[in-house]
Image (cartoon, rainbow, N blue to C red; front, side, top):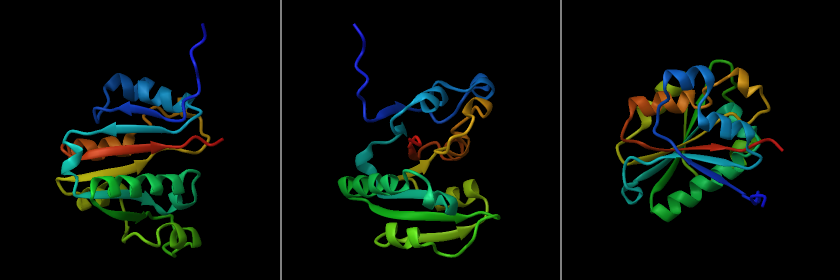
Length: 176
């Protein structure tokens, strides 16, 4: 008997860090993300969700036009509403990105407070976090040779190591 393969979403738990072996060969989550034809949510909840005061969606300018960004914003809005938490976007412009507001940003993020900052993503996002936050990040959603880049969760992992009590959700949308 063949297993049914009609999932519309895969949810993975995540401890927030990887081993040396994971960094070299890739982790189970890397393999799930690499092979998944459906969206993947990678979750780490060290604290009860009902304690969440803010939902922080942290993105770079380049993510505004990526496949799945609108859906990621919708997930953040839904979670904030269900948790009765405030929603905020931290929009990081890195060195090579323009600082102008794009049409997609204006439309998608029109109802959400956006904190625009420039510089190192990990450092700037880390500075924004408070104890009862739920941080939402995205991971590689472009067709890349993931097997040449183990460690899909490098940025989320760096933030998780620095903030061990912060709940995190990493969102992946495969390019169809």
